[in-house]
Image (cartoon, rainbow, N blue to C red; front, side, top):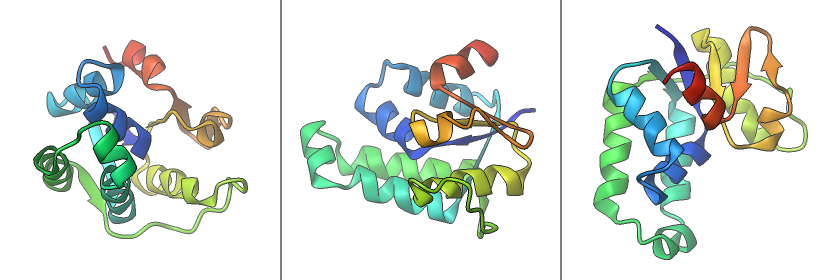
Length: 139
């Protein structure tokens, strides 16, 4: 089964637009169509971003939905406690955690909307794709 790292922006998009492509991506994971691999650092970023008042208020995200998503990730994903140091993306070093997670887990894909990651296209054996492209691969 495919191992996939999902960027924070996809989790945020899934909560904002429950009928969108990012929500479909999470639904595929819930239906065990792939293995979600993440890390404690990525989970912390998801929580931080979803709790930004400018996001939670603008999109009317409630704390229960945010907490449900975080609990689901913590209990159903493969969560790596620590990541190797990776210094590939210079313009936004925070994005390196997604590469590090994928490398450590030997994941096949990173799904992202972030141009710093997408511009790589591929890193070692990891394909870096948009959610739209991933949904074509794993319908």
